[in-house]
Length: 271
Image (cartoon, rainbow, N blue to C red; front, side, top):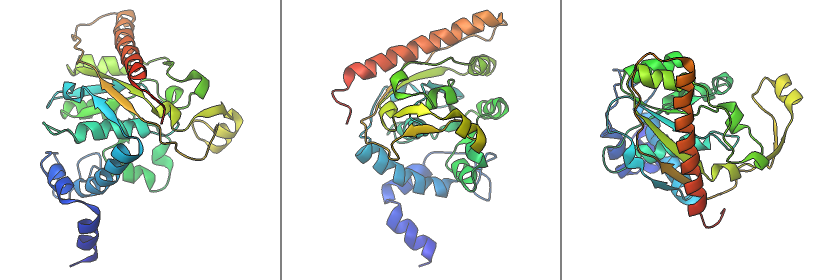
């Protein structure tokens, strides 16, 4: 037995190997898709994430069946927690569901691909640079795409501002309309408490070329996470003024706010 086969047998349970194999992804003969996704690497990531999802954050996901089984779809969620833990957990919830699982593609900040090795690794796990062109191509390819419209405004927020939604951009709505992609809103509760930040050292962030430099504990706290997936929202593709596009974005934002409130009311304790 080769070293690779031995490691695979020890690190990837048989049920995960079978589960990932039955999720169809359009990969080429070398095992990659056009954005770098790799089925075999995903199995290692999936195995590790299962432990994080079930044992560390003890995630409760409700309504994940609301994500359509096929076709283009945008999964729109609130962003929080300094690190992209929320995207990891939302993606796992969808990929691990028993009925018609899907491996979604997460839009990541431009900073991450600049870190040596990290960008390629995230691509192999299914993440893609958060660029409108990339998102458009994936929707045209019938992918499920996770988008955080708050961007770094959301992930870099301070603890005192937790669960207060920042401004949403209109880009995702234009894409949803153009590609007739339903929007599934998600309220994420718990990630705000994983790495609570009390301050952001903006001069340091600028000097280092990073989105933010939080003053926070150097650990990820095991906060219990609640994910609430709402019913799909559909919008026509008629040409409308930009202010009406903004109104549609506000509808999605209001639904996410409702789902956040639902998650906050459901949780009994932080940890």
